[in-house]
Image 1 (cartoon, rainbow, N blue to C red):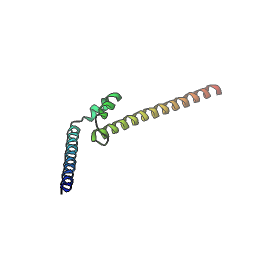
Image 2 (cartoon, rainbow, N blue to C red; image 1 turned 60 degrees about the horizontal axis):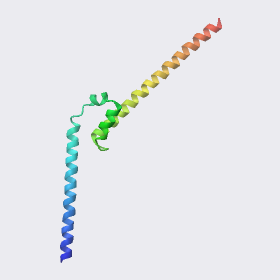
Image 3 (cartoon, helix red, strand yellow; image 1 turned 180 degrees about the vertical axis):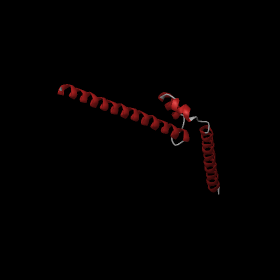
Image 4 (cartoon, one colour; image 1 turned 45 degrees about the vertical axis):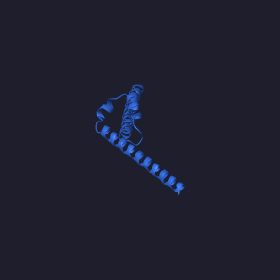
Length: 108
């Protein structure tokens, strides 16, 4: 009988612990959601890389803030790639113009 009562007591303790853990998770999710509503996307875009990394590290992966920071990183990479592509295109155009000019000069 005593063993059965101990098992019931252990089961109730484990169930209580699970409920407390679930409540803590729900509270953490609610706090993340409340903080997310205050995020200014323009402020994120103006942050330095170091400041953005520090801000992102405060939040767990999968949280809205973490995902928003990931989107900001992707945006920055895209902007850098576009700039690099434009520079490469400009250099190619400049090379073509200089090549045509040199060809024109040497043909006379």
